[in-house]
Length: 329
Image (cartoon, rainbow, N blue to C red; front, side, top):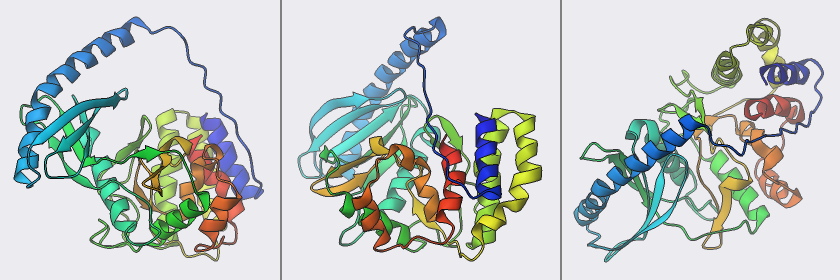
């Protein structure tokens, strides 16, 4: 994989060509013994979490003035968390995630990311982002939780509206209220994109093209090549490609935009007739970096018409796109 990433980046710089990539995933139908054991342990931890979680939700709701919990029902799960829908006597419906792991590892990055996107999507024609109410470690020490607004999710509807809403979020300024008081690249915490760590810290010294190039060079492609552990690819990147990245950004001024960070079709929907995006890997970066997953996001002409009505395409976009695609492949 790392040789593909390095080759893609090299081609983007040296030849300015676009590449299409198809990734095939072959999944075995058998579950290894170690994995079965881990799954049994995970099930046990989930049961322990549930004991303290209901009390945690109830106490928080009363303190917040939302009354009593009148209904608490399971609402699915993932490989690393369980979900609940909770209804209150005098407050909003809640979507609650819980895990046997601590909050810093599981929910802090997601909570801060949703808060930032919520702030940057305020106003007319914005994205419908769930409001985060509370998150933290369970007081009994058995895990952590994230409490947010429950959304009645549906499938994608108006792609032109989605495009305009994404552009409005990308155009929203970096502010203290949005969690970025110095208008820099990065994020307050590191997070994950899928199962891969995403390094966002420390913040850059500010915005601007040179700061962005250094951030992307070291914390995106460079970091992923280090994870792959292939010295040939790392040397190719460090010696031949990274020093020439500036050629792709000539004539443009890159300023930080809040990015969802993992925008593919499975993380896009609608809620109450408005476009919504969820399960983010948020950070502040070049708005074009948002489209690294566009090869599996089904963005058609309506979407791009909506987006480009507010953010026109910059010169060199098609030359830079293979570089951003390489991060997600």
